[in-house]
Amino acid sequence: MARRRTGPSDTVRDLVYQRDGGCCVRCGSLHRLTIHHRVNRGMGGAREPWINQAQNLLLVCTTCNGWFEDNPKPSYEAGWKVRRPQLPHEVEVQYADGRMYRLTPDGMRTTTAVATR
Image (tube, rainbow, N blue to C red; front, side, top):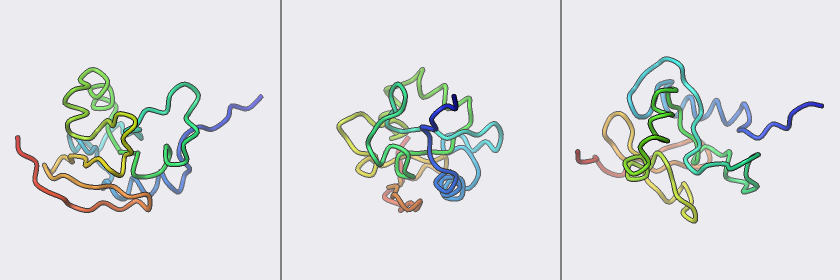
């Protein structure tokens, strides 16, 4: 029996890759990239229609993906992770360039402010 695909479509994956410039949004790495869900899908995937849309997805390296899980507080503060009941399009996310962006379902991002470190 074939497994049910619970991740984003190839079209959405391509949008995220292009939006994020083919590099990790946290560290800028070009290697070992994967798609990261800002709001966790949960066991077996979630039923919310936005869960696999571009505003909930980031291109990250596998090292940073693990870092998000090991460091939840700074990950939530930077918008790399989003807590329910918030929606991902409501939460700004910090990119490797230090800027904060709002993400949209159509795979675009808009600058909001420069993050302070």
